[in-house]
Length: 396
Image (cartoon, rainbow, N blue to C red):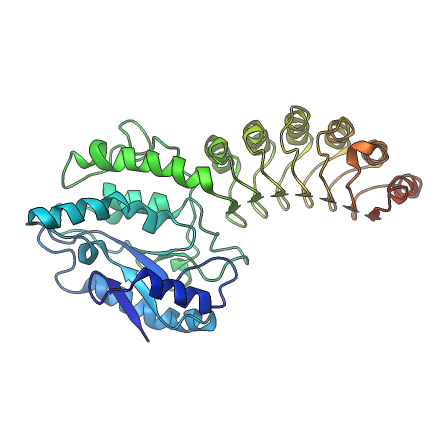
């Protein structure tokens, strides 16, 4: 087993790039772990090696998984080792400030893995990981754009809670994304504790706001599959989505949100002009949510989408009629694949979709999946005719 700690043995960027290039990581995971931990005493973050013991134990348990992806060496960044601590010389202070300026990226980057050391409390005030401002900051950053642990579209679990045991280390509930002002007073994390009380307003709160605009503004893919998110979590996501101007793929499959979440999501879609794939399968979206979605489409949202997955929801005729009318009006001119199977769409909804499919407004529609919907044979024939005129396929 090989591991290097930033600030101790030291891994260069070129070394880490070479390791990543030689790996079998398909989903962008990098050979870098950022450790999120609290200081157990004022003088030393880990005087008795409790944190180090957790890290070593996790490395021993997870090394086989890293090796299976061709990763035989990796770097761990520990801020205590990587940043000069007090007292500092003037030269060291310059280096410290430079390192602090970019510390957020180690936690927020899509490719890094973050290990959370949440067990126990400090010996000064008895405060836990969750009470502290800096660790809450690192946690919130780690929750932004990394693939969901529960998703199959990942190289390995990229957020691991070492304070929990066994499966709970990776199967903990993932909260909704925090809004940019989350660490300012009066907001979600505004009351957290800092050793230096000025850190909140001088560093953490503005740094989190800055990071949200930088990271979300450049993100191309968000994978939030199988997180058990309901309406509240998706409504919170909708607050952040207008920042995601470069987003090309949004995955919210196999959650549990319904119409309220879909309405909120639809209200944010106008900003996602680059979106090409939208996966909302396996939720509880019904006609009300679908109608809001159709209104957003008619207003010009999602004109670049080529693949739309809405299967295994609660969509019926009324929602499908509104959606079809929007498509007939040219709302989704690039759509190629439309997956609507396992809903509640009947003859009226499919007939409306057949009319839309027969127009030039859906000229690129190639594959349409309507399996497991209550559709009569006559209407199935109408849909097949509409698709065959343009060499498309419909699946019942």
